[in-house]
Structures are given as structure tokens and as C-alpha cells.
Length: 108
Image 1 (cartoon, one colour):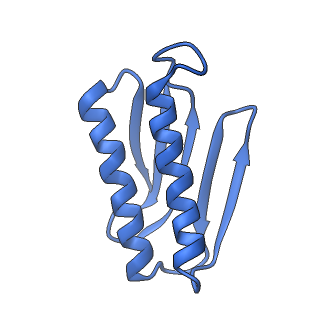
Image 2: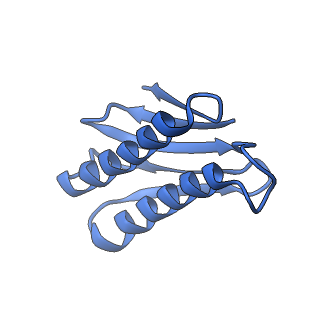
């Protein structure tokens, strides 16, 4: 199962972390895992590319199948919008495939 952990709140995110594998299908054919990975990497890349003043630390561990980021300060409006868009995508995957493959958690 993939766990998507959001630090802080949707309105004031402090970062997020995605860990695990969906096991929806065999590696290389797992569309749930691919969708979550694309959303995660694209969100981190978009913040890094388009929100120039946002300071964040990105960590990944290929063996654990994890990637995440933490914001150094209170995120700006653009970062909050990108994180909200990321969560909208994750919620869409949850709605389509159910909680058997992806879990969304909030942590302060």
C-alpha cells in the first residue's frame, strides 16, 4: 500500500511524504503506483521550478519507495495551490481505486 502523509494542514502544509507500493499490478504495469509517482514528482518539480523563493528539503529512498519534501518556512500561496492540486489528484485516485492501494494521512 502507498501511504501519502501530509504534514500540517491543507491550508498550511509543512510538506508531504509518499511511501510504499500500491501492489495493484506487477511492477512496471502498476497504474496506481505510476499515477501517484507522477503526481508526487511533478508537484515537487513544479514547486522547485515555478516557486523560486520556496525553500524546501527533498528526500527520497528508492529501496523504501519513498519521496517527500518539507518546507523550511510557511509556504507561499503558489506552493499551497500546488500542494492542494497534488492532494486533489491523490483523492481522485482514492475515489477511483479505493483505500486498498492508497492511504491519505494527515500529521502535524
